[in-house]
Image (tube, rainbow, N blue to C red; front, side, top):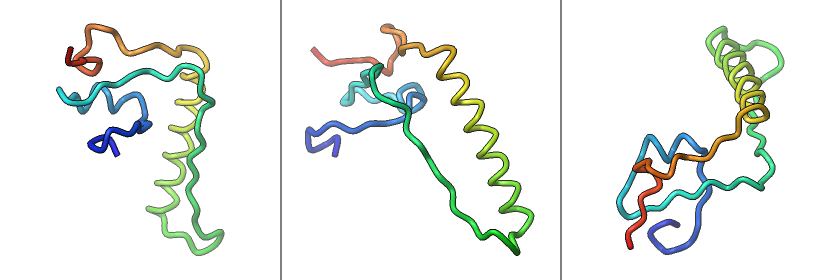
Length: 85
């Protein structure tokens, strides 16, 4: 989608982790947080799957709390905000 000229939405860490000269990242500040879900069986779950689900749940809670308390834009001098002019 990006190469075709259409917009895409990525999580904020993508901007810092994958900077590109041909992509401009713009912080969207007025969008509602997105929900991500994990589906698994209710019974007979392998321990590794249970551990993954628990880690994902904890990280989700931490991220949700962090977004509520410190929503910060990407610094303008970051390579992630590079725009060709």
